[in-house]
Amino acid sequence: MIHPLVTNHLRKGFSRSIKTEGMDVDAIGRAVTGCYGSPVKELPVGYQRWRAVHRAREQLVDERSALKVRMHERIHAVLPGISAQFDNIWSSPTGMLLIREMQSPAMLLKHSIEGLGKWCGRNGVRCTKARSEKLLDWAADAVPPGAVASTEAAILRADVEQLAFLTKRIELYERQSLQFLVQTPFVLLLSISGISHVLAGGLGAEAGAMHLYATARGLSGRAGLYPARYQSDETDLQGGGMAKGQPFLRDVLMKSGKCLTMPTGAFFAWAESRRALDWCEKEIAAAMANRYCRIAHAMVLSAQSFRHAAARPGVSVIGKLLNVAADLGIESTAVNDLALQAIVWIPAWARPQEIRNLQTGEWKNSNRPRDYGASPCTTRQISHGTVPVLLKWLKKPENQNDVAQQRLDFGPLV
Image (tube, rainbow, N blue to C red):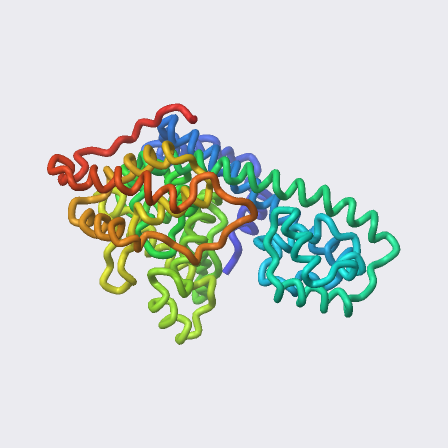
């Protein structure tokens, strides 16, 4: 078998005078006839704004991840081994306070167990007696920092401020993305266990209006979610994913596939059966992403909540939305507007479950991680202000019908 490039090279040696413009023009004509040159259809302006917000958030998340890697090195230079004293030092107010204020383990030894707790309290952080005792034991056995620890500590304080700034901007973009999400049926993807507001909003922002895809294969094909394959004679090699396609859309789908196969995901049992067959995690995530394309395509087009015989039952859309609003610190009036916009998309058959979830308080997620600082909008405020408004709207007879049409027009960003 001769490679086509070799054939092309040797042909020019004895037939260089042969012109191929005519054949090229004919090929271009057949390509246009076959719609190969068709332009990509423009998305509505609202979806373009949504996409810009989502991609800005993704860039900031990458920047924050890189910053944390650099900070880990400086933390080890200033306070060697302190990261091991916390499950996650980035989500621990006490840990962030220590790396911001302490320049060496010896500074902790100046405090007693009660004194360290009082010092943390004066700085707005609660530190239990057991935590104080554990930190002082670590400080007594810690390796002394290097000669440049004071300089590293000054840089570390600046990094902590930069980290807080990036986190605030990320939360700002998440609040803006949430305003777009509740205006579309993509909000129904929150009913899938394992799909967060970031993943649901990311799919809506990158995919655009779902009616643009005739089938779910159009969505997965645009993302490049199919394996690369090389065939020649008896050779048949099948490798990883294709390099073509929309990388941002593929990233959202692969992250969704990974989250759906985690212990808290809707398809964890399905993933366990594949792991028993020695599938690698990337293959499982890619297969789950293709399945998720079919599920999301059907749910969004028909405006239906999640229900699947081979998966965990769906969760409350409004309950998950209220927890997200509390974590992002959205004000009570804005939470009411978001919830009322989202609840319109919930189909009639799923609304009794939403009513029961709100009445019994099952929507409250007390196990979710809490970042440093208190949110202006807490779960208690939502329980007293937003939940009665939603229950009143749900119980009205005129609000028992399904959504008649999709609202694909967006207002300006607030």
